[in-house]
Image 1: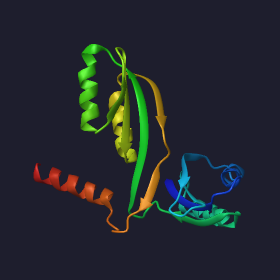
Image 2: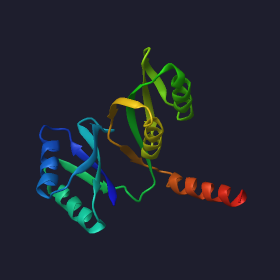
Image 3: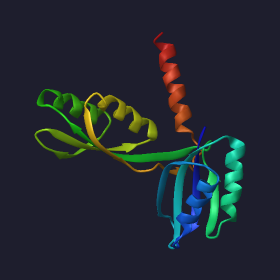
Length: 178
């Protein structure tokens, strides 16, 4: 199972190196990594996705707490959160297919950030499911380049799990129309 960890650290050189070293020594791969300034000066937030079972992730969190410059570690996997990723995707597209690609971009609220006679570059922002879905739809065309950020996440103060709401609404719609 993939887990999302939110780690607050003092913004000093070597912190990320120590964290990645801990993961390497334990044989873990970081699937997604995003680092940036947090709400207070001198503090950074690291958001990472890691595969592992609950017991192993708990041990990893305990090890992270022992590192120098780590202020807080939170497993936000099962907590209602706002999650976002950014993807830039460059597609070779023929004139006859361009309108379809632009329609898909419009449906996913993607922005065209570059266009030429033979290609389009789209900027897509959204939850990981949205990024996956548009990538699958555009996969039938020649994707020449993709650049993705790591997932970033913040805990919802409202404690509303929108993923659960989305599943419930989709279930209710399918129930009504069956």
